[in-house]
Image 1 (cartoon, rainbow, N blue to C red):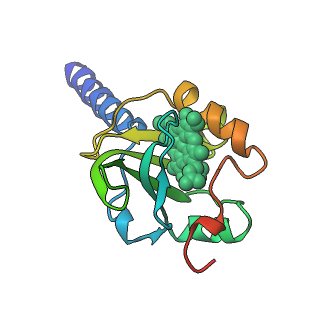
Image 2: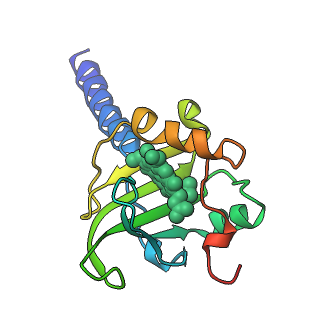
Length: 156
Ligand code: HEC
């Protein structure tokens, strides 16, 4: 009897650890080898996107862009942001990374997992519903909530 209780406790602890890990998003390894967008510079200081950024799309996301923004389950898109130095021609230090991953379980955010990370790739623990989705919903509800299009990538 005692050993059953111990076993159940161990099982419970393992499951809790596993599910907690699964729910905190991780930045995909090797995303810098994915298809990379043109360099995008936003010089309007009042914009959230003030700075320089590049969008990376994995194979599935590339097909999604080519299908006029219809993305298959699992598609992943990453954006890296850099500060603007005195000269906008030169990238300053990296300041933020964001991820969208098509995941049908994410019903409150249009079937996408939204996640923010610091420059070091560690999760910034932001709330995806209030911080991310409303803006994407407003600007791209007809484009699967993805604001950029194939025109943002070279070789369009
Ligand atoms: C103020 C509006 C706004 C908010 C808030 C916002 N985004 Fe975006 N996001 C944009 C715009 C505009 C683009 C397109 C940038 C471009 O065209 O280069 C974009 C692009 C992206 C992309 C590339 C795919 C796409 O839709 O073009 C990802 C990934 C992304 N955002 C994730 C996030 C995450 C994660 C958050 C929350 C931390 C977030 N965004 C919050 C406006 C917003």
